[in-house]
Amino acid sequence: MNRDIARLGTTIFETMSGLARDLGAINLGQGFPDGPGPAPLLEAAARALIEKSSQYPPMRGLPELRAAVAGYYAAHQRLDIAPEEVVITSGATEALAAALLALLDPGDEVILFQPLYDAYAPLVRRAGGVPRLVNLIPPHWRLPLDSIEDQLGRRTRMLVLNSPHNPTGSLIDAEEWHFLADLCERHDLLLLCDEVWEAMLFGEGAHRSPLAMAALRERAVKIGSAGKIFSLTGWKVGWACAAPPLAEAIGRMHQYLTFTTPPALQWAVAEGLALPPAWHAGHRRLHAAGRSRLAEGLARAGYAVQEGPATWFLLVDLTQSGIAMDDSTFCERLVREAGVAAIPLSAFYERDAETRYVRFCFTKAPEVLDEAVGRLAAFR
Ligand code: PMP
Ligand code: GLN
Image 1: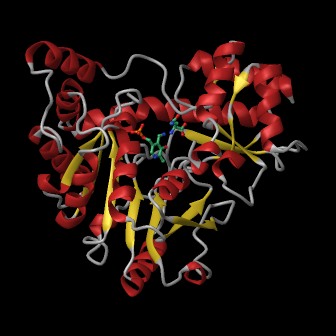
Image 2 (image 1 turned 30 degrees about the vertical axis):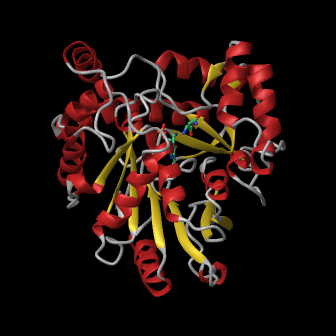
């Protein structure tokens, strides 16, 4: 087995969901909503399965879906993206892999910010890149603007950003974007921006994409996921959007990763993206109710809740909650003794872990959240 692969182990999401299944625990760990998903998309997929071709669609995606992605971003984020700048992938995960494999040369250094989504560092390494880890600053998880530049070297090629941010729910703000644009221009860096949570905004602040900024338009790759926009995480329809030379490179890599993505799901996502803004707002409100319910329930049970403005997650600060355990021990005991699965923040660190936070997913039915809160209250 390859040395990098040998040290990977199994992801925390799979491990915790497996434990939840085995123990019959409530799963607030891995991020996925319960329920079947939005009817218009399910119906569109069923229709497409019967009426459309199930053979290989065009390698970079159905033209209708590439146009729908461009149209969605024009309508929702006022972005000017041409359909030719969109590459449809099998989930955002494949878009990340394709972008890193296509754009890095062996030995290129990549700045990653911790806590970080677990796919980034292994993919950077397999693409021949060298991760340079920089810690975000709690409790608001800001970029350390004073020290990022110290991490840059002759071989630094790329920054990977995630906004809205999993697991903290934070957004990169205007000052940070301004700083990043200047940094990327001065050091000639590429910017890979994982925006899969862009539609799941509940609190203060607005989502901003680097593709909206002239200084970053030609050097940024924007990654999105229908799984998050439509609460259909198993569909694995994602995309990368970037200026033509970058999109071309990503498309060339994509043809040797998955080549394509199931056409019925592509048709359905194209229909879904064209739903009116009011539909999207209504869909978001379903999750907003779960967010308030879990946050209020946890607070009543004596937990110190930290709500970022976005994503399907909220954090509990164990120190502020007066709990002396580290987060991994807390989650291990919580799932076994109380029957609730959650994710320790330390799983989002490659090293120097902030080990005192726990992530809970709130996109569940009210009675599931209430039962989980009851168990958490009794566990203290
Ligand atoms: N990036 C981030 C930050 C995520 O949270 C996730 C999934 N939770 C992904 C990428 C993967 O998205 P997909 O399921 O579309 O591959
Ligand atoms: N992104 C999901 C989460 O943060 C998990 C995805 C996965 O299991 N790979 O919970």
